[in-house]
Length: 132
Image 1 (spheres, rainbow, N blue to C red):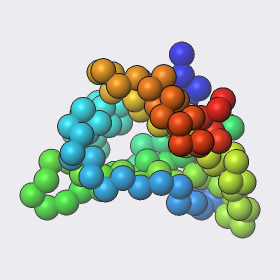
Image 2: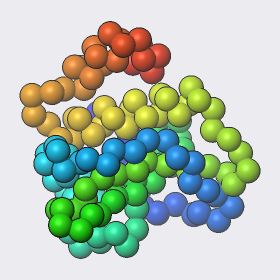
Image 3: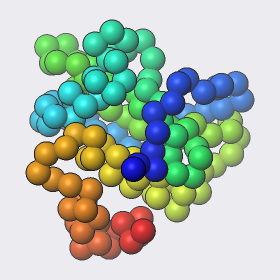
Image 4: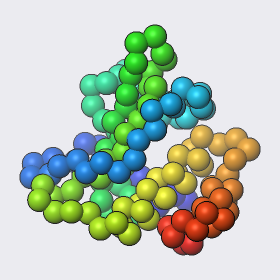
């Protein structure tokens, strides 16, 4: 069971997108491209709107998909926390949420690399959010 859930578009009045993470080479990992397309119905929606998830903190996050001419869509993704317009996001909350979102993506993609492998790699590199 994942601590991250796909949600519909939240009410964005009085909110802003706070940049969290970007990966501009999703095309190097076709399994991730397929996961995003399947999860967020990108073949139908395209660039018309972000995909939204709710992280363990309760904050919504917007996944903004990037398209490039000559490359299959999506070619990249930018993850943004949806926060109150004038409020910052605490670094430790952001880190824990991003780690949970990465785990959710890896589980959703499937294959030989698992969320446990991600956790072990995070612990090796002393990523605080990987400690649980």
